[in-house]
Every structure is written in structure tokens, then in C-alpha cells.
Length: 314
Image (cartoon, rainbow, N blue to C red):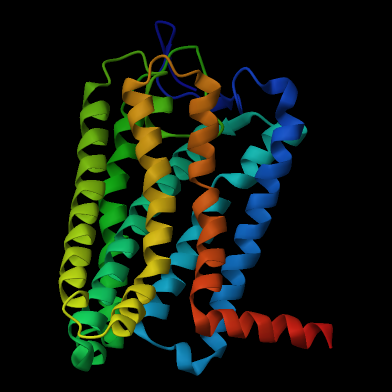
């Protein structure tokens, strides 16, 4: 740990508080959090197993769903074990390097998940608006390249967060009022001007969410134009039903994200423990709900899940 005139250039570790103000209830809070994490792991692993073993599901939509499942596993695992260790064992300390790694994975894979939702929207657009060329436009090499672009975008946009934090001098206060390492929660501990961190964080948030949501909305606008021109009501319902799962997971992801973003910036009257709980649920609820939604709404996956559990009962 280096020190200059009492200012720590780089602390060896930080202290995570968990849910500030609710330390006495950490054990009770850990029960639903642990349950959501277990369900997220089991559900996403089942989705990956079914898509891998069922050859009829080797299609663009399910490849993107596999990417989403992997992203959800990484996203929830990047925070849940440490969060539960805080709740159960009071293991509040996290090293500086581990903190940077955690915040990198949280922000990088949140960006990746948003990009995957955009890719899935484009897949639905091509499937409905240009079905005869769907497999040609979204061939396996194209899907791999799309996945790599989404991941590289996340890495390139989020890596500067770590460098911006490394350059900051930190004071003697090492307590992070959060349940995991989040960029601005760490930056607030610095004994220096963090305007660059604030501005860059806003630019990344508006760029990722603004770009992805705009083109997701545009994709569905084009889809609706085509769907409502279909001659029969049954055809319209069938076309819209293929988008139902995707719309549900998009709402489950973006609504908590929007609430977290707005309340952290403008909700100064919202109690801190509410902000931290919502921010934590934002990383646990979508990974838990995504496989449930797709398992219920996607006929092929639903039937395979039923077959798996029926076979196990026999």
C-alpha cells in the first residue's frame, strides 16, 4: 500500500457493507438471494444442455439464447458468491484487484447481455420479415461474428473503468456502501476529482442502452408493420407469439436497470438500502427469470424439459 501525505495511492483492500442499514437482517435477505442464484444456475445450465443435445434447436434463435444463458451465468456468479459470503460469514473484505475484476465482469457482461438482446431482436426481424433467407443471412459464421463483436464491445467500453480507477488516489476510507464493487461506488472513495469517471460512465450507459434499445424498438416496429399486414388473424398471433419470450426478458432486464440508473442519479430521497437491494436484484432476477420465461414460452424447450423430468421420475 503506497502512501503520500496520508493519501493512499492504492489501497490493498476495500470493505463491502452488504446492504447498508440492514446488517441485522443479512441472514434473512440471503435466503431469497441464494435461492435466486441457485435457480439461475440450474435453469441456465438446463437451457444450455437442451440446446446442445437437441439438434432441432441448432438454429440462430437458440444460439443467441445459449449466449444469453452463458452471460447470465457469468453475471450472477460474478457477484453472488461474494455477496453470500458477506451475508453468511461477514467476509466483507475484498482486495483491490479482486474488486476491479468484479466490477469489470459486472459491467462488461451487463453490456454483453444488452447486446445479445439486440441480436435476438434482429433475429426475430429476419425470421418474420425475411423468413426464406433467415438461415442464409444469419448463418453460423455470422452468428459467431455477432457474438464476438458484442463481447469485444463490452471489453473495450468497460476496460477504461479499471484504468480510470487505478489512476485515482484513495483516502483512508475503504468502506464501499454496496453489496458488490460497482464503478461509481468505488470512485466515490477517491480523494480526487472523479468528473472523468462520472462523464465516461454516463457516456457508456447512454451509448450501450441508447443504441441497443433504439434498434430493438426499430426492429419491433418493422416486425409489427409486417405482422399486421398478414391476411389471417391466426398467422398474426403465431408471428407475435414467437416474439413474446424475447419481449418478456427484455422488460425483465431493462426495467430494473432503468430504475437503478435513474434512482442512483436523481433519487436522492430513496433510502440507500433500497437502492442497493434493487441494484443487487438487477443482477439476479433476469438470470433467474430468463430460462423460466423461455422454458415456458418456447414450445421446443418446454417439451424437452418435460421429457427430462418425466424420464427422471421413471
